[in-house]
Length: 373
Image (cartoon, rainbow, N blue to C red; front, side, top):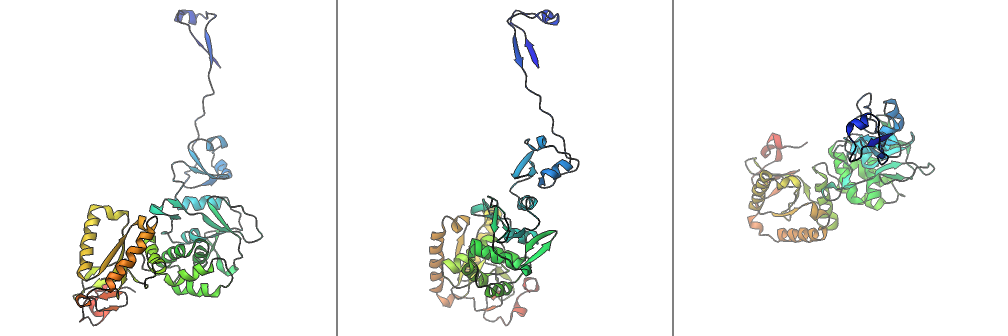
């Protein structure tokens, strides 16, 4: 298509009569882009190219800015977050053969452990790859978002959930510990136990039954540390640092500090009763004024019980971990050398710490709403 642009001395009537001067400048105009069509029904997750065609979306439309490429032959509507864990899992499943088995944190999330979002690092800025089991004789290529495991998995460790082959929760925790280390094993194990998908003794029994698996020593370290009372992944990491890296005794996890009247004084993330030392993790929500004020009141209550408090943030768990180790050890030593005559904590009743010498039992002094099963 050629559009005529008039010269400086040419009038509009001359153009209307078709009188074009020799020095007029022709300009070629490009093709006007087509308006992308909307799918025949709403798209709520990743789709393959074949699925997109069935929805009425052409290849040209998939190449526009309205769609995000998640992998070979997989697209996601641009208004949906590509880093969402469910979208990531769905994108990987869309490109997997039917015989592949989903494993690790993705298998646990698929089976109902929403706390596992596939993120790690300070503020969850790093994305963990999704583990896929292919077996020793199947061909499946590694990608940036996929970690292919070629070990042999017993049939008893695989189950089909919502049409997808996944590893059982115990096996998924075991694989995470073996492939990514004991710390990640503690994180996913705590989350799975908290969601009711397994128990710590089940994991310990499974690890004890294994003998020739790469990364088995890491799984043996993680299995006895699992707890259903950790409320978040950073709390699990802080406990791992406390026990494994700092070498301190295994602490109680989120115990209730109850006074003689049955009133709860506080619920520290970690507590060593003998050394009277508390470990607290402060997430991003603790920077809010209301939460920060509540934290100050709670810390003063702990100090009133002759407890030494050590606080940690995401920076302490990652780039400043060496300094955190020194602070934990120093705090534990100060608590161990405290003046025990000022210590009101007398004994423990399961996961309830009774801060009075006259407390007879947990059932008598802990209110019903604070009791744990």
